[in-house]
Image 1 (cartoon, rainbow, N blue to C red):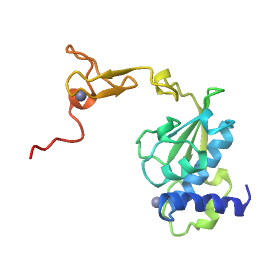
Image 2 (cartoon, rainbow, N blue to C red):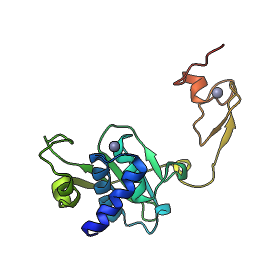
Image 3 (cartoon, rainbow, N blue to C red):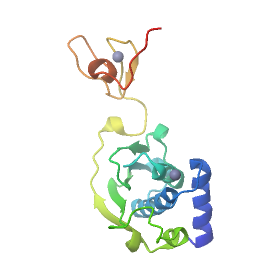
Image 4 (cartoon, helix red, strand yellow):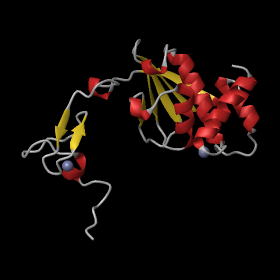
Amino acid sequence: MDEPELKSLLQRCVDYHGHSCRGQIFGVRIARKGTELAAAESARDMIVVVENDRCIADAIQIVTGTRIGRRTMKLVPYGRMAATFLNLKTARAWRVNLNLGDRPCDDPDLNDAALLMMPDEDLLRWREVRVDFPPHELPGKPQRVVRCTRCGEKVFDFRDLPDPAGPTCVACAQGGYYAEIDR
Ligand SMILES: [Zn+2]
Ligand SMILES: [Zn+2]
């Protein structure tokens, strides 16, 4: 990909993300490398696991064409500037991380235009990894839908927890991220 093509790809990411930031550049670079390594024929044949719910996640979605709602993108919030690219047809996966060493991501000595074109070896690190998702984590029809014994809401994809009373959603079993307010 030459410089004008990379710049137009970056612009698509910035448009989607809503502002121009270095995270879009890093996301483009991580996603380009991961896509090249995974060499999937289409976005449907790939799962991308992004390790950060910050700026890079948006760029990685746009560049790869993977989507949370298609189950082709997964968020594992490790807070790291990295993503793993799994080719579902070959079952081979590569993890790509930003590798700036001691330099901060917003280092003013780093130039945005240079970061976009810098050789992969100077910006990234990548390794082949093994990723074993169980079948219910993969794209496709839900294999299990149950009704929570306590709240009565449907729970998809084996996210329910066992309970003597019956299947229970995580929020009912462990307490959720919210508390209902009685007014
Ligand atoms: Zn941003
Ligand atoms: Zn429930």
